[in-house]
Amino acid sequence: MSTLTLTPRPRVTDRLATLPVAIIGAGPVGLAAAAHLADLGIAFTVLEAASGPAAAVEKWGHTRLFSAWREVVDPVARRLLEATGWTMPAEGRAPTGRELVDAYLRPLAELPEIAAHIRYGARVTGIAREGMDRTRSADRENTPFLVRTPKGELLARAVLDASGTYDSPNSLLSTGLPTIDDARISHALPDVLGRERDRFAGRHTVVVGAGHSAANTLISLVRLQRDAPGTRITWLIRNAGAVRVSSSADDELVGRAQLGARVDRYVEDGAVEKIDSFEIGGVEALPDGIRLLGTRRGERDAVTADVVVNATGFRPDLAPLREIRTDLDAVVEAPRLLAPLIDPNAHSCGTVEPHGFRELTHPEHGFFVVGMKSYGRAPTFLLATGYEQVRSIAAWLAGDLASASRVELALPATGVCSTDAGGCC
Ligand SMILES: Cc1cc2nc3c(=O)[nH]c(=O)nc-3n(C[C@H](O)[C@H](O)[C@H](O)COP(=O)(O)OP(=O)(O)OC[C@H]3O[C@@H](n4cnc5c(N)ncnc54)[C@H](O)[C@@H]3O)c2cc1C
Image 1: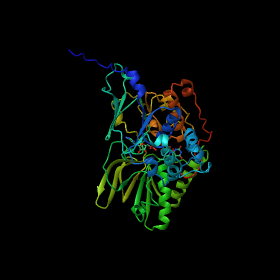
Image 2: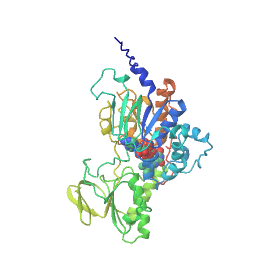
Image 3: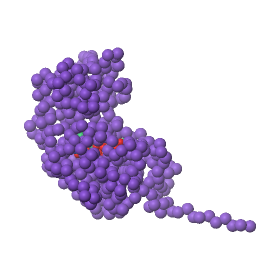
């Protein structure tokens, strides 16, 4: 009679150590995380939905950042790049999104120690623990993560969700509930003066939103109006004033104040018609336009346009995290410990404290949301802060608690927004 010898199943903890860290998204923060892990010799796989790196930044590539080059390049990524002969662009100048991709993010993604570990066309649709839904607790911490994409499932020892929020805009409706899909409703930051010029030239556009994305689009539309007769611009906001497009002289970010002042001037000149206190309750597709229905100072009102630009901000897509134990603030949908630091009512992008793995921890051991998505619905995220987040988490993954706990970023008192070109916050 033959004896059957069973190979003992490796202890789960041993198994975890053999698995890579999964990074979701090859944007600036996902790639910085990859650089930090590569530098520490920790195995990782980047799963990116698009066919190339930094797909979200590519989409707003025509927009100039507020921050100068020195604030948007991760220090470890810089060191890895410089070892290949790369040189830092003019440090004090603010790049456009496209320059950021061409001169920094693509070369970073192409470094051999990173490129070999990126899978493009791999949109993550769900994360769980292997064989476990959210409710199962036994040995959960020692069970690998399972990350699902249409191309297959990846097992991982930890997960960094750096998938951003650019693909999940807020709703036009003041309730936040979804509304109709229509080709005449544009995503924030359309390329008004370039690729999408024909969509706006000689037409009536309503820009909805009170932030810097809205201001950026309004400024581009005014420039278009000078060349294209018949271009009409309406700016529609929910409150009595546009709180984030501040033109106050004591705004701690000079660039931001200048941006607000420009928009204020266009409203005074009549180039932009401003409609305030308008609560959008419904959106109607007409044969020859889009109608926004709502209330204004207690009365029913409606505005009709050829194109509507939804610049109402972004929210995190939490659907893939359904089987993961997260602890999110009820208002901004950021990790609970981080939320008070980034509350948009109390902080602008210049005054958010740098933070690390502790503030980003969830009940799910080894799972972190980083980058833009970590701020939930708060609009104050800065790349420098995201780079510090991933530095701290990479140190934690390497078992270096002292380094993980240290805050190594000192943001300048004026913040890191240094131009009037618009964008962040
Ligand atoms: C117009 C504009 C100007 C800005 N200017 C500044 C500035 O001057 N200074 C500053 O510090 N910050 C600025 N920001 C804020 C912030 O730094 C950027 O939004 C930055 O791109 C955030 O980086 P991220 O890596 O977190 O996310 P993203 O850049 O959004 O990258 C996310 C990546 O994840 C991918 N992805 C999404 N979903 C999935 C999925 N399910 N599975 C796999 N991959 C996925 C996307 O394709 C993308 O490549 C600006 C933002 C905007 C919109």
